[in-house]
Each structure stands twice: as C-alpha cells, then as structure tokens.
Image (cartoon, rainbow, N blue to C red; front, side, top):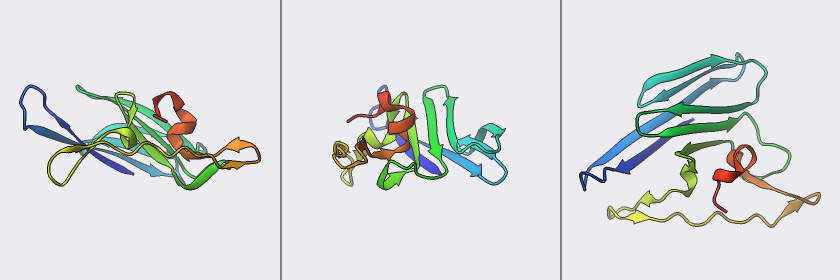
Length: 136
C-alpha cells in the first residue's frame, strides 16, 4: 500500500514538499515494513494479525498507518482497507491539488445510511480503528 502526499512550505510560498509512505505487508509470514520517503523506518513480524495500526514519527509529521487484510462483515461496497492519518487527520479528508495548482477541498464523506441487520456500514478501516480522526 502506498500513499503520496505533498505539503506547502509556509515560510517559502511556492515551495512544495512531496512525501511517500509505504506499507509492505507479507500476510502469509506476518512480516511488515513501513518506509517514509523510500527509507525503511519500521519493521516487525506478527503472525496471525489481520490489522495493522502503526504510528511513525517524522521530524514534521505524525503518521499513522491503518490497514486490514480483508473487509469486516459490516463493510460497505468499495470498503477501503488502508488509510493514512497525517497529524491525526485522514488523508481522504485533506484537500487535493487541482490541475490549475489551486487547492481543492475534498467532498464530504458520504454518510452511509444503509444498514445491515440494524448496524451502520463502514466505508474505511479508519472509521473502525480511529473514528475520532474521521470527518463525517
């Protein structure tokens, strides 16, 4: 799973930093490694676990990677099994860079009003593991 994101440098307008976070997870053996800007920053082996919830601290960011091997029973169609929280905010809720170089706000997450056996359906792994960071 790979996430790419960029940030504007407030001290130097027009300067943009681009970063990449990647989770490499061998589900069969349980080996996991997380890289930040192509440098491995964390490795571990946990067999039998189907969820990854790992925080990586960088000089500028607190990055939390959430991932699961398969969707839970109460998942909606198109459930996203991986999510990156940047300083506590989901990358899916942050603005994106438009083709004209202007920031474009993300559409609000669609509220799931469908239910399954009287329970809310989830759209992302973050809604399950870290609901306080997800904007609804």
